[in-house]
Length: 60
Image (cartoon, rainbow, N blue to C red; front, side, top):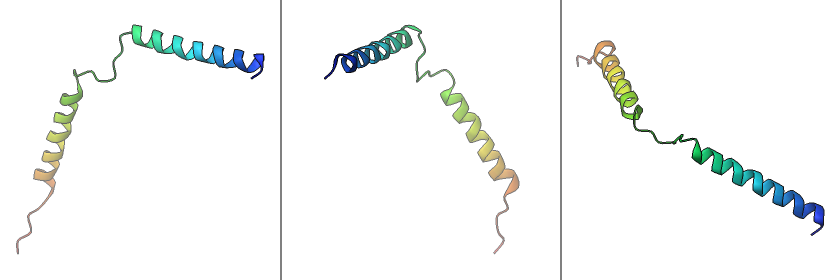
């Protein structure tokens, strides 16, 4: 490999590593449990409300 290719690989690797380290230090987590189940509960309530209010049971 040429020296230019090695430099590009080294710089891009360093940039990716820096991005990962800074992202880890920020404290942002992908799975925060504060609102995931609440949103699911709201969706469930709306779905059951629509099902109970706007659907008719067929009289066969």
